[in-house]
Amino acid sequence: MAPLGAPRRPVTPGLDPLALITGKFYFFCLLLTAVLSYTNGLPTRTERLISENDRYYSVEGQNGLIKCLLCPAGTYVAEHCTIPYTSGRCENCPEDTFSQYASGLPECLTCDICRDDQKETSSCIATKNTVCHCKKGTFCPPGQPCEICMPCTSRCPEDQVVKAPCNSTTDMHCSPPSSSTSTSDIVIACVVVSFIIIIIIIIVACVYQKKRSTDTGSKLFGKLTFHICCKENEDHNEAKGDLLQRDIILQFKEGIDRDTKEEIIPRLWPIIVRKVPIKEFSSLMHSLGLSQNEIESAKVDNPSNVNNQHSAMLQTWYQKGAFDINTLLKALRSLDMEKAAHDITDQLISEELYVPQIQQ
Image 1 (cartoon, one colour):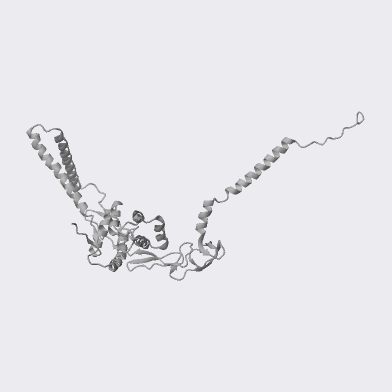
Image 2 (cartoon, rainbow, N blue to C red):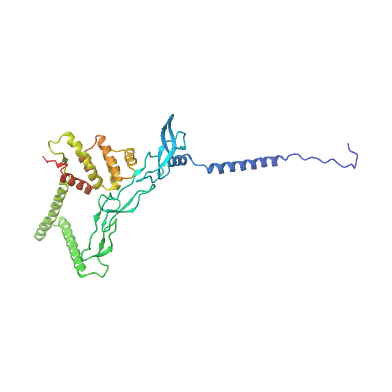
C-alpha cells in the first residue's frame, strides 16, 4: 500500500465496447459501399449477351461451337479463329466488293452497278455500296423496288400550277393556284350542295313513307319514293355482284405437264414481289404459314437486296408444299390488299401464265 500523500500510478484505460462496435459498423459500411459501386458498374447478363452478339460470331471448333471476333467493316473472314473470343484472319475486301458493317462473312458483298437509266452519285468503296439515283427527268418512288425509272410529268393541267418539281424520288406535284376562288369553283360547290339536299329529301321521304301512308296522294308519293329507294338497293346489289366477280379462280392451261408447271412457278416471284407493298410482305408470309425464323433466314441470306429476300420467302413457302396462287390471292384480300390481288391476277392472265377457271 502506498504511503499517505504519495502520487498514484497512472491507470491505463481499456477499450471502450461502444467505440469498438461503432468502428466495426463504419468499416462494414465502407466495404459494402465499395462492393455495390463495383457491381453497379458491371453489365447485366442480358447486356453481356447483346455485347457478344455485336462483337462475335459462332463457328464450329474442335470441341463444338466457339465465338470469334467479327472482322471490321471493309474486310471479310479469311480464316476463322481457333481460340475462343479471339480474332481470326481478316483481309480487305477485293475491288468491286464491300462490307458495310463488322461481320463474320467469308466474303464481301458485290457492289451494285447503276443501270442505264440511273446515274452514279457515290462510288462503291470497301465500306459502302454504290449509290445510284434516277437520271434527270425520271424518278423512282421511295420505299419500293426501283426496277425502272419512270418519266416525270412534263406539265401540270391547265387549272393547276407546279408546287414541287420532279426529282429522283418524287414526281412533279401539281395543285390548284392559291388565288381567290374562281367562278367555276363556285358553280361546282353549288351543284354539290344541291345534290346533297336532294339526297336528304329522298331519305326523309323514305322514312316518312314508312311511318305514314294514309291518303291516295301519299300512296302515290310513296310509290315514287319506294321505287327510288329500291332502285338504289338494286344498284348496290349489282355493284356488290361485280365486286364478287373480281374474285377470279386461276388455273393452269389444260394439257400442261408437271415439268412445265415447275418452270412457270419461279416466274411468278418477280410479279408478286413488285405488286405487294414492301411493308406488308412479312405479314403476307405470316398469313401463308411461314414462321418468323423462316422469314428472318431469308433476310439474312440476302442482306442487301429486298427483292431477293421476298423471292426467297416465296421459294420457302413453295418448298413446304403449300404453294397455291389462289391461296395467296385470298390472303391478300383478307389483309385489305385488294389492289395487289387484282394487279397480280391481271398480269398472270395477260402473260398467259394462268387462265381463269370456267365457272360451272
